[in-house]
Image (cartoon, rainbow over all chains, first blue to last red; front, side, top):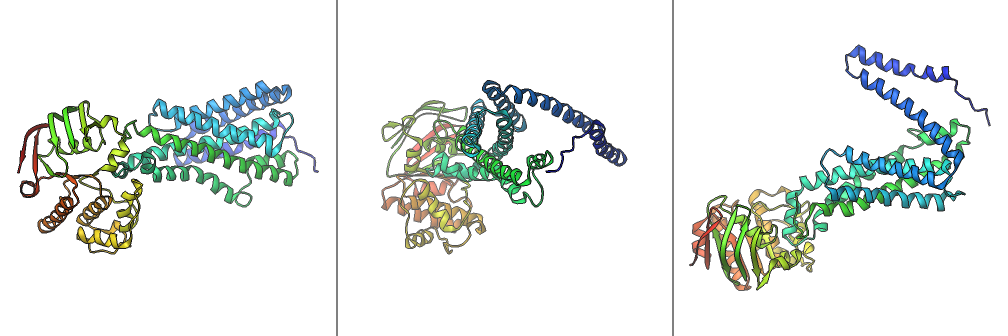
Length: 259
Length: 212
């Protein structure tokens, strides 16, 4: 194995030339984005440095309670982020369903992944647990955000069809089936598309990181395949739970469309 | 069949008492915005009254399962939805939704003939004209053979001669099969010709119920 190149401060600083290049381009073209670019660069740098130190600390103490607490924080942040991303005011019932779907979908996939697929010991080893949880939670968050938007738009846009189906004696579930299927499909499609291009169009971040840090590409690829399948499972499970329960919030107990 | 007692729906409808008999044709007439469609939607439980109670076969509809009621009391809105797919898909969708057994091609052809839709069941339904879509939706409801038909202006997109043929076919079917038809119509002529009872509504209030 070749020696790992540890980046010096000046080498890292040299990478910021790309930010300067981008600032130069937007300035020349008169695009008012300088402030956002500077804020994004500073935030990225500070957040990653902070995360690096926190991860170092967590990897050292290797405590199940702290590992679970970190996952809890990730979930809470992801759920809050879904509420913020959706542009429509969500009902309290819908918020509960989003939180339940996220927690159930991601934790069940994560536990399966940890205990069955990679079978780590101890099970709470933060070096594995935290990055894998991050990937499952992050992708499920994106999936559910898409699913929520598509479900709300679909029910609103197809109100006439859904009401007509109800008038013919359809159950709310049958009346909304097409909208639910479309919401699920839209939510899962980005994950499927990323699987198609993986390894040819782009090398995933996790795999690139592992290769750069000196791990054999074959090992990195094995992990990447397993993680990608875990992500697919987590997104699918979270989103299907969400659409199966989420549609009900649009109907009252008399099976009437409530929007 | 239906008995409405002191029912109110927001400030749209306010009816002290109304009895709609079974196995009869009842036409609901009145100006636009008088509450005719709201009345049909209340009978099909698409909405619930804010005060009072509606009885269906002596049972309060608030205590009847909405889906069961809608399978027995089917409503056809004024602008019925056409579902994606063929004419056949659209005819059968009501049976599928209400979990009733599907029918064969002969029955589909019979229904298409009854609503004067001279089309192949395999044609795409989205290509039909407004009047054809309305007849297709009517055929879909007839195929379900419910106990009660709630029809909201079922011939509003038809020309006068087609309207007459379709309504006559519908009335014959209802009488021969001992069904109940409750129909909103803008046409006093249709109401006077075919109805057993005419219910007139003005500004959400029942102003007359008479036997023709």
